Image 1 (spheres, one colour):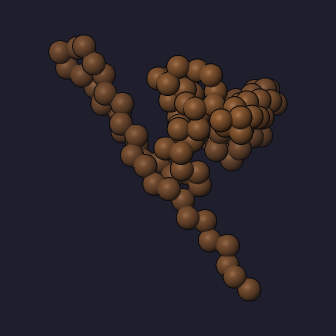
Image 2 (cartoon, helix red, strand yellow):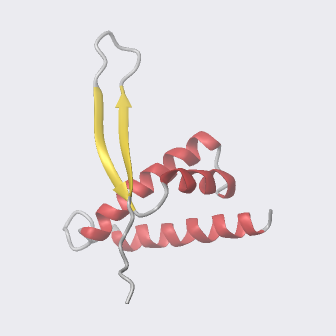
Length: 102
């Protein structure tokens, strides 16, 4: 019997403040079962959004989605979860349909 071992992708996320004399930096490590770069590329190609906006959406959903799934019973997420699920289904079907038509 073959073992199903997850091979998570590992990333470092860095946010740098710009336009100030003493910029702040925020940095954290992130693991995901999905390839973040592939997700960004697909959403850029199939969402109909401007590439810069599509990049932000892709990164945002890949950061928020797994947190919400892990803590879906948490009071902060309970009311939002059905809406997020509907959004993700719409996003995935929109991208899939657009990429299929290429």
